[in-house]
Length: 256
Image (cartoon, rainbow, N blue to C red; front, side):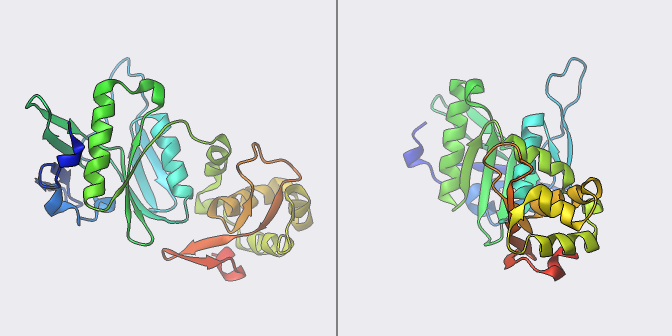
């Protein structure tokens, strides 16, 4: 399909509202809908012999569960949850359809819709390079073109980072301990080694989960792109998100 002649009126969008009503119309008319709050456009299938793993991911950003249709999708939900600029997200947010080159109707449901703190939007498809067939490539290209028509960004992602996947296990507020968090922030006010700072605060067995929680929230930051977190990894105060805005980390933020 020639995406250069595509218009927002050529693309039909169908979604299920937060109230449970199915709505349909052109992308040009419906794009202002807050899709980060809608229900999944389709159910997550389960059946005997299923190779993909559907489920629900508890999101610290959303304060609730977001569905996924594979472990890879779940992993990318974790990465979106970690991004300080993300304020909301929904899975299987809508179905797009358009007329293909042979006159047949082509349909595609993106994996996620993401809302950022500045109000901009991102549509995400999760598919490794080796699993993209020619018809899939066409769908991704048209979806990217359609998104650009209404000012949305689009990305197609594959395998995620392993270190962030490990930190995600400490994202839940139940890991947070206000007193320990405040002492950790004081210990790393000027930066320092991960394990030395934890030992300064107390027993690492009790302190490290709180430290990892603060790393997830980015109250504390470290170089997560250097591989596994080493005992001497440099940790320092970071920038955290409150109410959709960025702010310098403070004892008040760390204490919840």
